[in-house]
Amino acid sequence: MSYAHTEVAQIAAISSNRCIGKNNELPWHISADLQHFKQMTTTQNDGDIQGIVIMGRKTFESMGSKPLPKRVSFIISTQMDYAEQKGLVGKNNAHVVHNLDDALTQAASLAHGAHLETIWVIGGERVFNDALMYTDRIELTHVDTDITDGEAFYPELPERFKVVVESELMHDEKSDLSFKFTTYRVDTAK
Ligand SMILES: NC(=O)c1ccc[n+]([C@@H]2O[C@H](COP(=O)([O-])OP(=O)(O)OC[C@H]3O[C@@H](n4cnc5c(N)ncnc54)[C@H](OP(=O)(O)O)[C@@H]3O)[C@@H](O)[C@H]2O)c1
Image 1 (cartoon, rainbow, N blue to C red):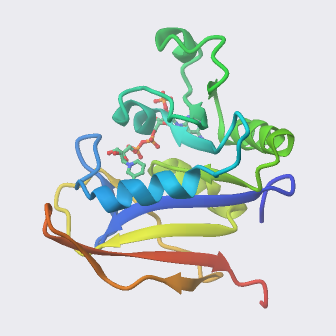
Image 2: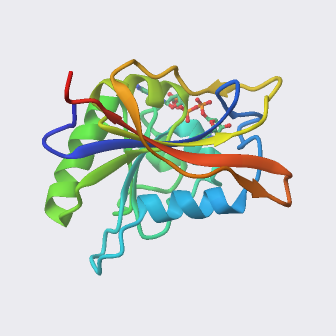
Protein backbone atom coordinates (compact mmCIF):
# COMPACT_ATOMS: atom_id res chain seq x y z
CA MET A 1 0.00 0.00 0.00
CA SER A 2 1.01 3.60 -0.65
CA TYR A 3 3.93 4.51 -2.87
CA ALA A 4 7.26 5.74 -1.53
CA HIS A 5 5.49 6.73 1.73
CA THR A 6 2.98 8.91 -0.10
CA GLU A 7 -0.72 8.20 0.25
CA VAL A 8 -2.29 7.05 -3.02
CA ALA A 9 -5.97 7.93 -3.35
CA GLN A 10 -8.43 7.32 -6.16
CA ILE A 11 -11.44 9.47 -6.93
CA ALA A 12 -14.31 8.56 -9.26
CA ALA A 13 -18.02 8.98 -9.80
CA ILE A 14 -19.68 5.68 -10.63
CA SER A 15 -23.20 4.56 -11.60
CA SER A 16 -25.06 1.66 -9.98
CA ASN A 17 -23.61 -0.60 -12.69
CA ARG A 18 -20.12 0.91 -12.07
CA CYS A 19 -20.01 2.91 -15.31
CA ILE A 20 -17.66 5.92 -15.29
CA GLY A 21 -17.65 6.99 -18.93
CA LYS A 22 -19.62 7.04 -22.16
CA ASN A 23 -18.53 8.59 -25.52
CA ASN A 24 -15.33 9.67 -23.77
CA GLU A 25 -17.29 11.92 -21.40
CA LEU A 26 -18.78 11.65 -17.95
CA PRO A 27 -22.24 10.04 -18.29
CA TRP A 28 -23.81 12.92 -16.25
CA HIS A 29 -23.28 16.50 -15.18
CA ILE A 30 -23.55 16.96 -11.44
CA SER A 31 -22.00 20.26 -10.42
CA ALA A 32 -21.73 19.31 -6.72
CA ASP A 33 -19.65 16.31 -7.75
CA LEU A 34 -17.31 18.42 -9.91
CA GLN A 35 -16.94 20.73 -6.93
CA HIS A 36 -16.19 17.74 -4.69
CA PHE A 37 -13.52 16.53 -7.15
CA LYS A 38 -11.89 19.97 -7.20
CA GLN A 39 -11.97 20.27 -3.43
CA MET A 40 -10.54 16.78 -2.86
CA THR A 41 -7.70 17.08 -5.35
CA THR A 42 -6.65 20.66 -4.47
CA THR A 43 -5.18 21.56 -1.08
CA GLN A 44 -5.60 25.00 0.44
CA ASN A 45 -1.88 25.61 1.01
CA ASP A 46 -0.07 28.57 -0.56
CA GLY A 47 2.47 26.49 -2.47
CA ASP A 48 2.78 26.58 -6.26
CA ILE A 49 1.58 22.98 -6.45
CA GLN A 50 -1.76 22.41 -4.76
CA GLY A 51 -2.40 18.89 -5.98
CA ILE A 52 -0.98 16.01 -8.02
CA VAL A 53 -3.14 13.89 -10.32
CA ILE A 54 -2.42 10.83 -12.48
CA MET A 55 -4.64 9.99 -15.43
CA GLY A 56 -4.85 7.99 -18.64
CA ARG A 57 -4.59 9.66 -22.03
CA LYS A 58 -8.34 9.42 -22.78
CA THR A 59 -9.30 11.00 -19.48
CA PHE A 60 -6.92 13.90 -20.25
CA GLU A 61 -8.57 14.31 -23.67
CA SER A 62 -12.04 14.10 -22.10
CA MET A 63 -11.12 17.24 -20.13
CA GLY A 64 -10.23 19.16 -23.31
CA SER A 65 -6.54 18.10 -23.21
CA LYS A 66 -5.88 20.80 -20.60
CA PRO A 67 -4.00 20.28 -17.33
CA LEU A 68 -6.16 20.90 -14.27
CA PRO A 69 -5.67 24.37 -12.74
CA LYS A 70 -3.36 24.62 -9.67
CA ARG A 71 -2.47 20.93 -9.94
CA VAL A 72 0.29 18.98 -11.66
CA SER A 73 -0.98 16.34 -14.10
CA PHE A 74 0.80 13.11 -15.01
CA ILE A 75 -0.69 11.75 -18.23
CA ILE A 76 -0.04 8.12 -19.16
CA SER A 77 0.22 7.16 -22.85
CA THR A 78 2.18 4.59 -24.81
CA GLN A 79 2.67 7.20 -27.55
CA MET A 80 6.26 8.42 -27.39
CA ASP A 81 5.45 11.73 -29.11
CA TYR A 82 2.30 12.50 -27.11
CA ALA A 83 3.84 15.47 -25.24
CA GLU A 84 4.89 17.04 -28.57
CA GLN A 85 1.46 16.36 -30.12
CA LYS A 86 -0.26 18.21 -27.29
CA GLY A 87 2.26 21.02 -26.86
CA LEU A 88 3.21 19.84 -23.37
CA VAL A 89 7.01 19.73 -23.78
CA GLY A 90 8.69 21.88 -21.12
CA LYS A 91 5.45 22.54 -19.20
CA ASN A 92 5.87 22.13 -15.47
CA ASN A 93 2.20 21.45 -14.75
CA ALA A 94 1.80 18.47 -17.12
CA HIS A 95 4.10 15.51 -17.69
CA VAL A 96 3.58 12.66 -20.13
CA VAL A 97 4.79 9.29 -18.85
CA HIS A 98 4.61 5.90 -20.52
CA ASN A 99 3.62 3.55 -17.72
CA LEU A 100 1.97 3.62 -14.30
CA ASP A 101 5.20 2.98 -12.36
CA ASP A 102 6.83 6.08 -13.84
CA ALA A 103 3.69 8.08 -13.05
CA LEU A 104 3.67 6.96 -9.41
CA THR A 105 7.44 7.38 -8.91
CA GLN A 106 7.54 10.88 -10.39
CA ALA A 107 4.31 11.93 -8.65
CA ALA A 108 5.53 10.66 -5.26
CA SER A 109 8.85 12.44 -5.67
CA LEU A 110 7.08 15.70 -6.53
CA ALA A 111 4.71 15.23 -3.58
CA HIS A 112 7.68 14.95 -1.19
CA GLY A 113 9.20 18.16 -2.51
CA ALA A 114 5.88 20.01 -2.37
CA HIS A 115 4.96 18.66 1.09
CA LEU A 116 1.78 17.05 -0.22
CA GLU A 117 0.56 13.93 1.55
CA THR A 118 -1.52 12.47 -1.25
CA ILE A 119 -1.30 11.70 -4.95
CA TRP A 120 -4.60 11.31 -6.76
CA VAL A 121 -5.43 8.69 -9.38
CA ILE A 122 -8.29 10.15 -11.41
CA GLY A 123 -8.96 7.50 -14.09
CA GLY A 124 -9.91 5.94 -16.37
CA GLU A 125 -10.68 2.27 -16.17
CA ARG A 126 -7.24 0.71 -16.67
CA VAL A 127 -5.44 3.25 -14.52
CA PHE A 128 -7.94 2.76 -11.67
CA ASN A 129 -7.58 -0.99 -11.99
CA ASP A 130 -3.77 -1.12 -12.20
CA ALA A 131 -3.30 1.41 -9.36
CA LEU A 132 -5.56 -0.44 -6.90
CA MET A 133 -2.66 -2.42 -5.46
CA TYR A 134 -0.94 0.81 -4.35
CA THR A 135 -4.12 2.54 -3.21
CA ASP A 136 -4.82 3.47 0.43
CA ARG A 137 -8.03 5.47 0.03
CA ILE A 138 -10.86 5.66 -2.47
CA GLU A 139 -13.36 8.50 -2.77
CA LEU A 140 -16.38 7.31 -4.75
CA THR A 141 -19.43 9.29 -5.71
CA HIS A 142 -22.20 6.74 -6.07
CA VAL A 143 -24.68 8.01 -8.65
CA ASP A 144 -28.05 6.33 -8.42
CA THR A 145 -28.58 5.44 -12.08
CA ASP A 146 -27.86 2.61 -14.51
CA ILE A 147 -25.93 3.59 -17.62
CA THR A 148 -26.52 1.58 -20.77
CA ASP A 149 -23.84 1.45 -23.49
CA GLY A 150 -21.14 2.69 -21.12
CA GLU A 151 -17.53 2.34 -22.29
CA ALA A 152 -15.47 2.64 -19.13
CA PHE A 153 -16.15 1.01 -15.77
CA TYR A 154 -14.79 1.24 -12.23
CA PRO A 155 -13.41 -2.06 -10.89
CA GLU A 156 -15.04 -4.08 -8.11
CA LEU A 157 -13.26 -3.22 -4.86
CA PRO A 158 -11.16 -5.91 -3.20
CA GLU A 159 -12.43 -6.90 0.25
CA ARG A 160 -9.66 -5.03 2.07
CA PHE A 161 -11.40 -1.71 1.29
CA LYS A 162 -13.98 -0.77 3.92
CA VAL A 163 -16.39 2.16 4.07
CA VAL A 164 -15.16 4.72 6.61
CA VAL A 165 -17.33 7.74 5.79
CA GLU A 166 -20.60 7.99 3.91
CA SER A 167 -22.57 11.17 3.20
CA GLU A 168 -26.32 11.38 3.21
CA LEU A 169 -28.11 10.86 -0.11
CA MET A 170 -28.19 14.13 -2.05
CA HIS A 171 -30.16 15.15 -5.10
CA ASP A 172 -29.06 17.14 -8.16
CA GLU A 173 -32.01 19.09 -9.48
CA LYS A 174 -30.70 19.75 -12.99
CA SER A 175 -29.95 16.11 -13.81
CA ASP A 176 -32.62 14.74 -11.44
CA LEU A 177 -30.02 12.28 -10.11
CA SER A 178 -29.40 11.21 -6.52
CA PHE A 179 -25.86 10.62 -5.31
CA LYS A 180 -23.73 10.17 -2.22
CA PHE A 181 -20.04 10.48 -1.38
CA THR A 182 -18.34 7.44 0.16
CA THR A 183 -14.79 7.12 1.48
CA TYR A 184 -13.15 3.69 1.53
CA ARG A 185 -9.88 2.85 3.24
CA VAL A 186 -7.76 -0.22 3.44
CA ASP A 187 -8.65 -2.04 6.64
CA THR A 188 -5.26 -2.26 8.37
CA ALA A 189 -6.65 -4.39 11.21
CA LYS A 190 -6.51 -7.42 8.90
N1 LIG B 1 -16.64 9.00 -13.69
C1 LIG B 1 -15.39 9.30 -13.38
O1 LIG B 1 -15.06 9.56 -12.23
C2 LIG B 1 -14.35 9.29 -14.45
C3 LIG B 1 -12.99 9.49 -14.15
C4 LIG B 1 -12.07 9.44 -15.19
C5 LIG B 1 -12.49 9.20 -16.48
N2 LIG B 1 -13.82 9.02 -16.71
C6 LIG B 1 -14.31 8.70 -18.06
O2 LIG B 1 -13.64 7.53 -18.49
C7 LIG B 1 -13.45 7.59 -19.90
C8 LIG B 1 -11.95 7.50 -20.21
O3 LIG B 1 -11.42 6.39 -19.54
P1 LIG B 1 -10.85 5.12 -20.31
O4 LIG B 1 -10.83 4.02 -19.34
O5 LIG B 1 -11.60 4.96 -21.60
O6 LIG B 1 -9.39 5.61 -20.71
P2 LIG B 1 -8.12 6.14 -19.83
O7 LIG B 1 -7.72 5.13 -18.83
O8 LIG B 1 -8.34 7.52 -19.37
O9 LIG B 1 -7.05 6.21 -20.99
C9 LIG B 1 -6.63 5.02 -21.60
C10 LIG B 1 -5.31 5.31 -22.28
O10 LIG B 1 -4.34 5.69 -21.31
C11 LIG B 1 -3.10 5.10 -21.62
N3 LIG B 1 -2.77 4.13 -20.57
C12 LIG B 1 -3.54 3.77 -19.53
N4 LIG B 1 -2.87 2.92 -18.71
C13 LIG B 1 -1.65 2.77 -19.26
C14 LIG B 1 -0.49 2.05 -18.87
N5 LIG B 1 -0.45 1.32 -17.73
N6 LIG B 1 0.59 2.11 -19.67
C15 LIG B 1 0.57 2.85 -20.79
N7 LIG B 1 -0.50 3.57 -21.22
C16 LIG B 1 -1.59 3.53 -20.44
C17 LIG B 1 -3.26 4.50 -23.00
O11 LIG B 1 -3.03 5.58 -23.89
P3 LIG B 1 -2.50 5.42 -25.42
O12 LIG B 1 -3.65 4.81 -26.18
O13 LIG B 1 -2.20 6.81 -25.83
O14 LIG B 1 -1.30 4.52 -25.34
C18 LIG B 1 -4.73 4.11 -23.00
O15 LIG B 1 -5.29 3.96 -24.29
C19 LIG B 1 -14.09 8.90 -20.34
O16 LIG B 1 -15.44 8.64 -20.70
C20 LIG B 1 -14.02 9.74 -19.10
O17 LIG B 1 -15.02 10.76 -19.10
C21 LIG B 1 -14.74 9.07 -15.74
